[in-house]
Image 1 (cartoon, rainbow, N blue to C red):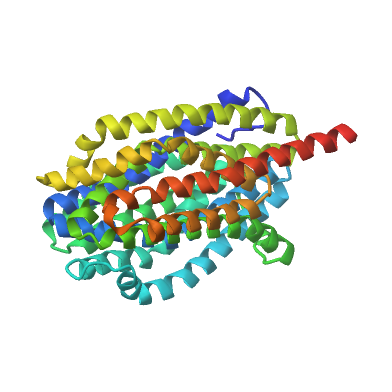
Image 2 (tube, one colour):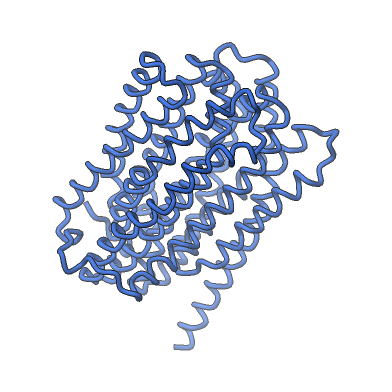
Length: 447
């Protein structure tokens, strides 16, 4: 069902919207986690390192695609909040057209250049072939991945955060079955894990689309809704491109981080891969909050209800503290146990390196939570420039630590690159939102 986020208690609405999104994000992580666990246990430590070494490269490309998709969802939330259903249908149609065009433009060069990019990242020779086999298939399925995220973004834009979750649960079960069949029984190796992921994403996208079309009349597009108009394309891309570039800039930073880790050998790469999985699981409440705030701010901006935006942001900041504390507890007290899920008979070196990263990162989870809150809120408020620039600052901070940290500190020094990036990116976002709120209050007071 649709959820109008322009009425009712802001905290209650944000939490009710966030719970299905959180479960969806956890299942999204579950996709990758199942791949990683089965790869690590059935194909070995080198295969685990191979799949893990593609993470930031995958984030670079799919993050760009999914950022575009989220931007489309924000425009849908604006039209829904304003109750302009004709414009809403056009935005839905335009989202589907642009999804097809953008996914094709991304697929061809990424599939062609995948091995070159892995080599540029200093991927160890003993795992680069397995890494390339995995990432090529993932890139070939960009259309399926992006289609699911676009349809999910449209549904969330009208307040329905449950439907994407239901279909994602269904496809997660399919993903597990396909993982076992394609990795364990067919001998496809790391490519089998990738095939399982994109097939499951494709099934989820198709089912979600047909449900959306049959369930919601306001989203049921007609032939006259499908046209490329300069104003519509400009509005969609004005939100989508900054969000996409922000993902990509962040991904470039993680690629730099991965390149720095790769020089320490496959054992440290495997440890960092497992630790990253633990961190991603523990911090899923943070992007969940960000998704909720983008929709919440978008709908209320469309409805012109600024006081609700201010109140919702105050509640969101309160939730950041809880999210950071919970994530730190999971990493510090449960990190070693969760790391053991991903590697069969892990060595003490793997445990030590993984826990070193998790312990350092845990102290800086509050700035990370605030990044998701303020970056997504500003994007929902049509303030896309500073969030994109914050990504540049994040990249510069991460690169600066890696470049300047003494070589004698080894992996320990590299572990501070992510925290430095989170602090550096969070400050301008926080200041920008405060200035926006002050400016809006002054404008409405004068009126």
